[in-house]
Length: 259
Image 1 (cartoon, rainbow, N blue to C red):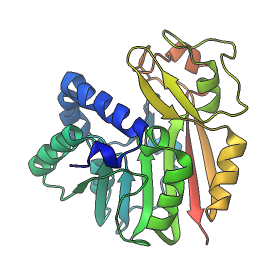
Image 2 (tube, rainbow, N blue to C red; image 1 turned 180 degrees about the horizontal axis):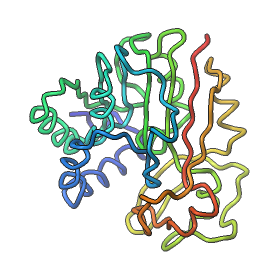
Image 3 (cartoon, one colour; image 1 turned 45 degrees about the vertical axis):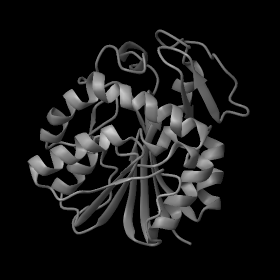
């Protein structure tokens, strides 16, 4: 188990939150997610068949940073990945993932570690992936360099996060506003008090572009996700389908390591 003394304050806070969430709902929902064969993205539940942002998966070595119960890792392995490693800092989430990995027999490798410093060998993967894992719960100025370190030359990074506009319109509690609630200048670390204290990280698009380029990436695509017919009317993050029919609720970035 990763000691709290080895983790930054936000990782400890968020690990505690996800320990609670696993007891309340993620463990219960994980089996259904693992059972799915179709890949969908985020709260919008956008179908990969429609989005088409993932690179070729057949025979690839993939690491998911902040895998949680590892349902997305399971989907990637089902699509033909040769090796899938899931990294997460929350032991109870990994316990759920290991139980389901045994049940479904997918052969995932599951590692307890901070996604900002995984301890995995450099240049070991063809794809680094994150869907609401490291992509919002880790400091991008730490996890993006780690992603670059883990990738082989020509490897790809794919991650999903809240859209910048959704973050700027998010209220402390309740549905998102149709007006801006915070400044974009200096956007980085956000602390939420409702329903529980949690810490996440968000950047504006310009900062994302500069950060990716400074770590040797070229940007291949940016897909903004709006509500689909499968989007719940209300989500865990209090965003609503009504809001997301007008503005992007989430976005997926795809970048290639060139240096």
